[in-house]
Amino acid sequence: MSPVDDGFMSGSFDKTVRLWDLRSPTCRGLLNLPAPPVVAYDASGLVFAVGVNQYSRILLYDQANFDKAPFLTIALEDSTLSRVTYPPRAIYMTSLAFSSNGKYILVGCSGNAHYVMDAFEGHLLAKLEGHTGLERRRLDVPISIEPARGCSGEEVSWTPDSKFVVSGSLDGKIYVWDAQNLPVKKDQPVDTKAPPVSLSPIAVLDGHPGPSRCVKFNPRFAMMCSAGAELAFWLPDQSGDPEEVAKELLKKK
Image (tube, rainbow, N blue to C red; front, side, top):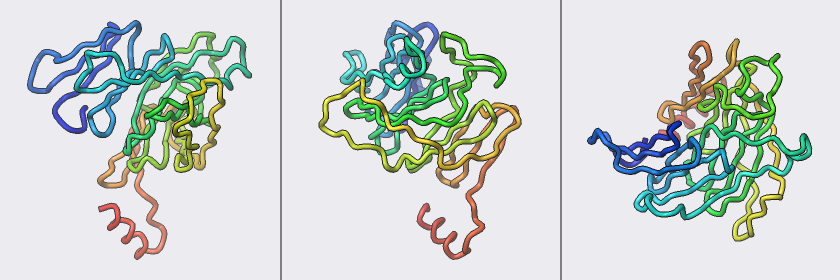
């Protein structure tokens, strides 16, 4: 959904991106792509991103001029993967999400890592590791040569303030990464061979008996929701001093 109007966007297996309006039964815009895309709006609704796995590229479009070429093309290339296998195993993007300030793009992947990229120049900033990707059905199933989507796509998201990233995992746990101290590469040339900063989770929460496949936030009530075979609601920890908890709640309001 667009954050500013009644428009929304869809990516399809027919290799198209369609822009819609709730007031019309037909799409108002169409983009043809070489492969099924993943899509996301930025917080202002002025820009949207399209991820194309076939070329490991993220295309940024101006909402008002979507029929023109993308104004920025970002290459998603992780040089550290060549240390594991050669040729390196491809990255399979399953979701995109802009941070609330519009500076970063969170790239959710079906493998054992998610990525944070600079939304203005295209630098690969951080690699989020520690969880187990959802491209497999079970932990005892070996990883295939070719990456697959699996049941991945909704399991990773920003917190409402974009200070942390939260993700589900094949082992059912919920993983939390601190994204407050990402490297700054402003006005530097983009180097696709430069390795990203590897971030380990700062917290691991016991979640679901099976894979945790979806994690979302309610910013108004500071509540998180996760889902696997069952639905779980997470409330903020209020075990501290009542006055301090009240102050924090008032700040959020």
